[in-house]
Image (cartoon, rainbow, N blue to C red; front, side):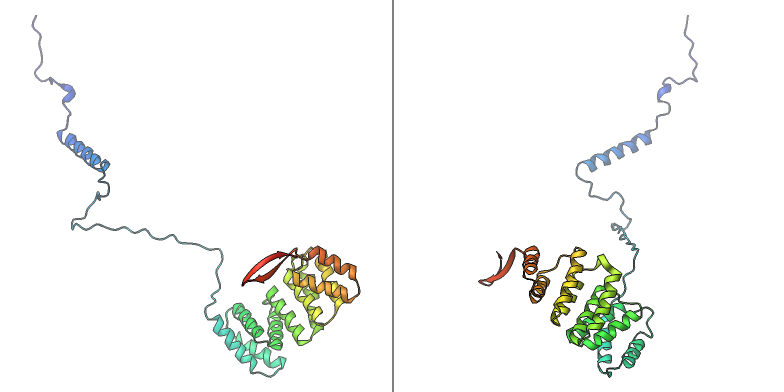
Length: 262
């Protein structure tokens, strides 16, 4: 019996949809991949028509801050102008305060940095009365309530012999800040009382230091020991030196600073 095969059926139906162009494209892609794997990865895959490589630069990362730094540019010049202005004035509160008010008249915000620099300049020049005037003016404006300002004012009161004002400021600072007072302010007040030969006041401030657990520096320890000695309390003088004086001291030996045991 003869096998009847229809002529319209394909002999190889599985290869009917084979696309020669797709096979060639796949071969080219494999060849490119092999070249890249053999150390040619530094060549650009895309080249412009003009033959020039296009350089793509990434934009820098933008930083966002939750705070905005005050611009201190020109604050030194502004501080010097203030110092020159008030140093020419007579020692009258109204004149000095008027000049200070004019100094900030056109400012959008209080020039705190320039005012702090002006205080430092006045301190270097030993203009104690001007430090008192500028410091009290700043505080009256609700500005500059910092430990640096308080320290400058206490020093100026000390050098100007105004113990009553120093004690008023000291009591205010002690009540306001209490346990957050730094060692610097205690040392300044003890130095003030020691300078004016008030050993009992030195002991009072030292008692506050001990109560608030503020450890004194070596200069303060010597002043306190001297105060106990002046009051005739030799035993307490010895205890203070034993408790707080460092076991080490520094001496200069052959041009070098050497630490030795006491």
